[in-house]
Amino acid sequence: MAGRRGALIVLEGVDRAGKSTQGRRLVDALCDAGFRAELLRCPERSTEIGKLLSSYLEKKSELEDHAVHLLFSANRWEQVPLIKEKLSQGVTLVMDRYAFSGVAYTGAKKLRSVEASARGEFGHERYEKKAFQERVLQCFQQLMRDETLNWKVIDASKSIEDVHEEIRALSEEAMESAAQRPLGELWK
Ligand code: 2DT
Ligand code: MG
Image 1 (cartoon, helix red, strand yellow):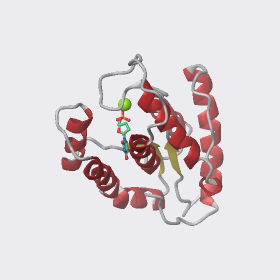
Image 2: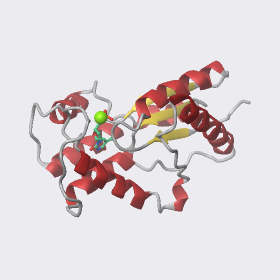
Image 3: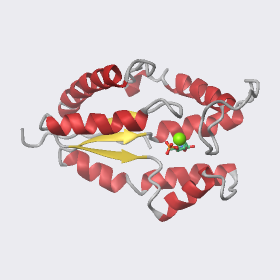
């Protein structure tokens, strides 16, 4: 249908939840079904700002917490013109993380309520520690209280295939309802 706008589908969650795997599967499935869909990620590590963030995350450089927060934000703003253009052209965007990670990960640095525990089976990047991830989860749970944001909670412990089916069905609903509403302001 001419003039249909795309939906902005944001996958959020702690590290290792399977967002990148599911994002790729979702875009492939939507394209196979004849929809126009593309994958974007935050941070997008290929830009100049993204390279600073990548080096920080890999613990190759140190940056002050507020400055890092603003770099993550700037890294999203760099993508905003493209996001708006694609959505208005009818392309559905699947985002591997977005501004909610910005709030949750910075918020987790301020929460000191959970006891530090032994390092889990995470990778080697800066935030990949169990106690930190628990604080991130707490922050996401607070963000999900905002009912205007249309959150859907997905149990990521199920199989890749089951999680994919659930996300695909929810995404098709979201694309249908997005098409009925004009593009509003982005939460960024
Ligand atoms: P991945 O590339 O593995 O998802 O890791 N992050 C992300 C922030 O701290 N603030 C943000 O605004 C965003 C988008 C989450 C990227 C890491 O960066 C964190 C994990
Ligand atoms: Mg990661």
